[in-house]
Amino acid sequence: MTEVEIGIELTLNGVKRPSRVPPRRTLADHLRTDHHLTGTHLGCEHGVCGACTVLLDGEAVRSCLVFAVQADGSEVTTVEGLTGEDGALSPVQAAFRDHHGLQCGFCTPGFVVSATALLERNPHPTDEEIREALSGNLCRCTGYQGILKAVRAAADGERPAVE
Image 1 (cartoon, rainbow, N blue to C red):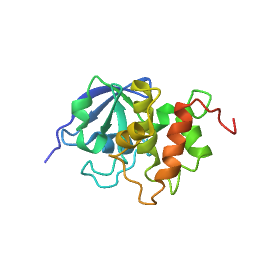
Image 2: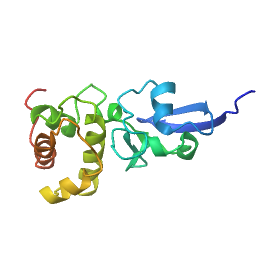
Image 3: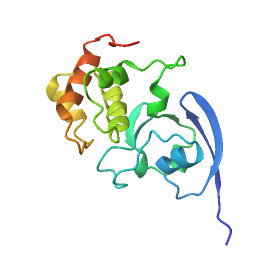
């Protein structure tokens, strides 16, 4: 039996990327398999852990719960897309590195994307607002204090320790 594929086009990390996908392929699988953007991690595949969080038209979403065809015509930003064209880390990425928010690193992309979305809509969050915004992301290493410090530092505009 021939599998049906549907043509879609994403603006992926700032670049228009046409492709053909099976209708039931998730956005997470599409990013990892078809575009080799492996920073989007798959943890629970039920939208619970947040490891697969990406920005879809500026909103943080669980890419394991979105079919790739649903994202047709949208702008998708993965953790790789947060890095500058010169390879410089975003302020949130640098803050995670500088404030021990990385832990084992599996959950980090989801946290970084969720924190970026938070700071886009609320550049000066309280610690409670940071905790609430990141409550949908799970860190199995329990590195929450470092993650909170990292987001606080990014919100406060701390300069990265290493350029």
